Image 1 (cartoon, helix red, strand yellow):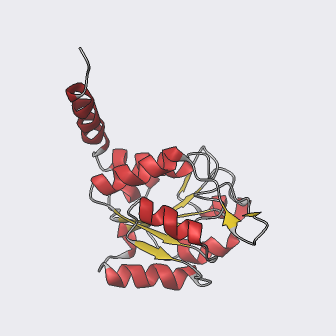
Image 2 (spheres, helix red, strand yellow):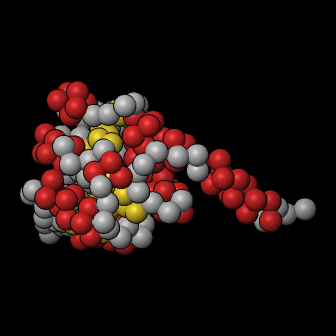
Length: 181
């Protein structure tokens, strides 16, 4: 089954953080606080998926306040931090939302994401993912983590589900209401 066919069934999209929503750099401030760079296009992609009725979740092995803040800002329902066993975390989300594996997508970049790949119907890798991750992905983004890969993946899923054009039209309609004459 090709990635477009797999994408048609998706109801939950689970995202790793470091290397997926960020470029993978870990910036530590003088007081030990973590700083991360997120791409606005990824945020828009998450928002569009939510507007289309899809659930979004974060599953990450690390814990940081900035991830909680960004996830809350993006209205991501489940922010699972400190999850060393990402496959178990994905399974728990499937139970919570009563979903089958074919209804779940996972976006990852490194070896610790591979067990989660085995739990889902659509495994996606960012463009700069480890070769072993790309080899096992159903879809590999053309963009790197932290550089719009999540937006690209969200767009692919929404287009595969036939929801993309309606989302774009809703933005165009809203924009036409605000045109200054």
